[in-house]
Image 1: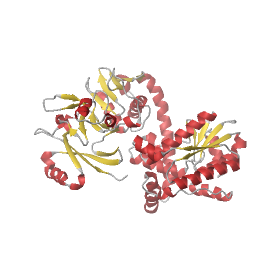
Image 2: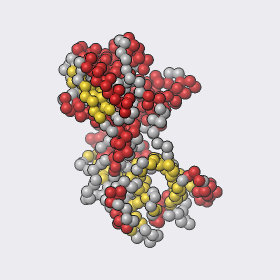
Image 3: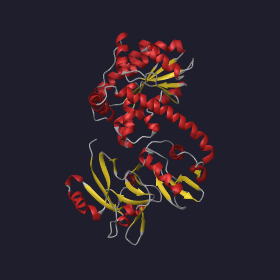
Length: 476
């Protein structure tokens, strides 16, 4: 175990002599192993170690126990330890994240803050081989590309993962060999968390029914995909200079040069342009990349609206990416302003206050599926059901909060009303307006769940495709 970690550190150049390293330690088996093994190697690599423990305010008694255990362990190993307290349930409620997502965000914020405070060069976390397998599966189910299937990287900026190629059994064996105790986290057995379901239910079922070495195979796939991704990235670096130009709030593609590139390079270049404006790749999918790719062979003037207030359009010899509402002040990006792109067919979840709702989107052709359509409308378990003329929707659908320039179409004649004025007329308190979800196509509001739909998208006699939306409360 110690030899494997040493080889990983050397192979990936994780540390240089004299590095200050922040360790994320929860008190659980994996992070305790990370602490102990780096403590053994710190003289060899000349490291200066600092520990951060995040108290999540979940299961207060257990959290207090974990914090006290971590502090005592660090004192025994003569390693400085900082305990950071974060009310993760409150953070999740305020941000619209799941508790799992909020906990991760709180931990990494604490790690980076401590790294800045002590002038650290690296942050070490305790991901291991099974975490890698779970990540690959999770990304696969969510529609990941090659980059997503590359899973967790051994080194990512300041972040390093010395245990990434170690199995849980190796970690347990190492701790037993040095007689090191650790804290058991009861929440690891609760399958309400997605990763726990993969770890406790799905992967064991696959191991029993399909392949007992599935985790090893998934880790091998991740390594292959990482190598492929790195190669494509190098090719894109060269192509980027020929094909696109980045400005402060705009990306411009030269259509002729772009179409000469291999298709795999084209897709990655589009994703780079989108992620540049979105300041990250979260919630950007192949659906959004495909929507932009269509513009390169489309007519001049065609456009498509995308998440993060990005609009893409064709302009003669160029395809442009920019921010919606040019010339107007755009709100700072935050979790309260985040957007969720809608796939049709598909589904998504929205949190409104304390309630979580699930919305499903499907297409129905009345002349062929009228009976099915009526049956779906009459089913009680569908909660609320809304129908819109899908052919009148010209841009990508997005669930989001209000933005400057939003409007509603009030009637079939096309009369408009600003969303702000609608909220005022409905006497919706100002402090609640930014928390209301809207279904939008660009700046045009199609539906405000719980309030009203836009007549501009109502189903008519000439409607060929009906967008059927069903919404119902979802389990947290």
